[in-house]
Amino acid sequence: MGMNIDNCPRCGKIYVKNQFQLCPTCLKDLEQEYEKCVKYLRENKKCTIYELSEGTGVQINQITRFIREGRISIYDHPGMSYACDVCGTAIREGHICESCRTKFSKDIRNLAEDETRKTENSKQTITYNILNKDNKKH
Figure 1 (cartoon, rainbow, N blue to C red):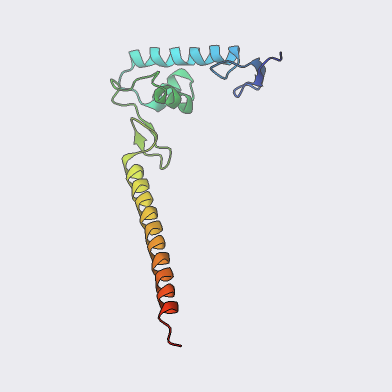
Figure 2 (spheres, helix red, strand yellow):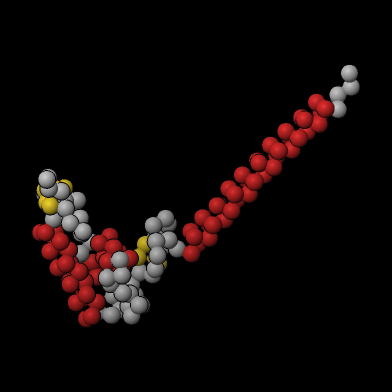
């Protein structure tokens, strides 16, 4: 029976696969980063994500992951926000801002309507061609 091993996505070292998909060293480092963030936020309720990153040395994308995973709550931290995945606008929940969400919804609706029109037009063309063939004078 072979071992399930992989390369750690953070450091590249080989490790035995686990539910966290990180080697033990990186997992420990990640937990230390998390603890630094939580401690800093307790002491600096009004800080921004940039101030948190600068004050802890934790990268903004990692802080964003902590927030999205629900490990860090920004509910009581009015200055905290992170970037929309699409446009970069500051948001406090989810992955995209309301403006991008609305635009995507509109685009999806328009695509669906275009498909419906194409389907209806092709049905009309087929019907017209069939009627023409049947109504021909010989």
